[in-house]
Image (tube, rainbow, N blue to C red; front, side):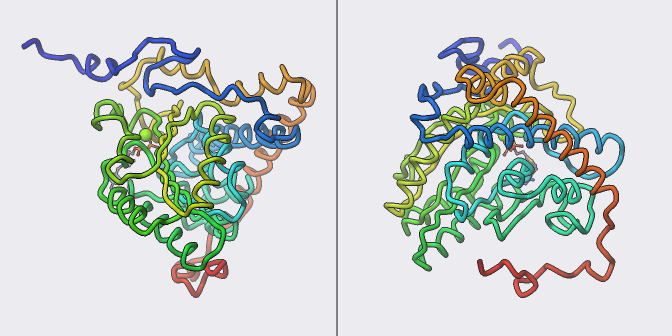
Length: 366
Ligand SMILES: Cc1ncc(C[n+]2csc(CCOP(=O)(O)OP(=O)(O)O)c2C)c(N)n1
Ligand SMILES: [Mg+2]
């Protein structure tokens, strides 16, 4: 048998090169985007503006963070969310403010969306005491517990049972909250996910378990590391499921709102696959030999921020000048955040063991 070249395996997934519903079908096969307009979705002009600003903030925050990393302002891991902003934004706008969110280490966008300021986020990256986790968490551990954002986690799949626990607490306390958990395609075969799915269905926990399938787990294409369709994991647990186009913020918003309503009303779990694409390497040192430049460029053509901007202009929600005002405001916010992070102090040595236990955390009982 002729020896397969690595590229044959990596770049020959189902649907490669096909154009379906106007979208390229490579790293991930995107389902059709919703045809609904913002008004059909109940989104006001102000909400749309806020959505755009939030997505642009996430993008520019990380581009600036990358530059600061390259300047040596901080070290360690830095996993960028660039390309995936429609997932966090569509979801956060669809949920109630006190619904719980927990995610993996690609967490900056989620944190910003849930109210971590650019200042607090940049300072956290720089390891400063003014950061959202007091400088002791860094890139992978953004958190804002008083806003029900329970943070980023570094162990693949490790945080999924915590989402089950949050959902259990919400059900036990008979409140109206649901819990949502985001993890990568690399986590779909972890035992922690399957144990959580089983218990969540058994106990009818109000939780949405969401795979952000960005096509790759480090350098391994999802189509090479896992069998069958990811969403079909739901069948084994008789769980309701959906596949969502994660390059379109309206699609994420629409479906996540519907699902959240269902979970809230019926108290039962859902398993959701949101298909998206990351533009940058896995972390900062990734030569990206596992994908072609063309593939990346194809996804950049359907960029979620550009897509929303085009929609906003076409529907005359905002003018070019108004968009530029938002962009300029965000740019300034981020430049100020770099200055703020630079001028902040590192945590003191005697604070090293603080914030480790429940009693130290004023927000733990929110
Ligand atoms: C249990 C565990 N195994 C391995 C790793 C090393 N590791 C870090 S990120 C990663 C890839 C995960 O990819 P995915 O879940 O698709 O998330 P993405 O990076 O695409 O957001 C791996 C294997 C880890 N952090 N935890
Ligand atoms: Mg992935």
